[in-house]
Image (spheres, rainbow, N blue to C red):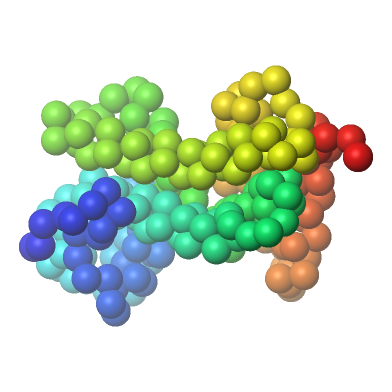
Length: 213
């Protein structure tokens, strides 16, 4: 098993094995971490649990890799729209929108990211697990910092109005991350439907941040 290169690097080469992470994410989302077993993931995957144990020594290692994949997709969604000639408020709007879409389109993975935060708050069971969770929380903080950076630019260019950038960003991301709790795709839902919902969420957030013309 290869060593990790960074907190977002998976423990394995996921080529051909992303289905393990998706199956595990769905189980964790539906049943929670403690109630989910490797047997549950194998049944969801339609494979033997030996296939999973070939890559992961434990359920915890699998959970952490699902968390990493969820965060990797968040970064992938947001970073392309961070920079540009537009005022910072427009770029921040685009970042929030892409994050909301990522939450909806990677729902099971993102639900595990939220569960990881709870696990960190209440304590993992071993020092090694606590160290890994601390690394993953650092990645979450780095993700939040992307939004803060653009928000500070907005305060400087006059396109954003807030008395506390850190609090404003935490509130905004909290609202978007809450999608993992209440959002469930409707039958026959389309990408357009998700974009409309993302726009409604982000419009509500940005109404409190946009500086008057």
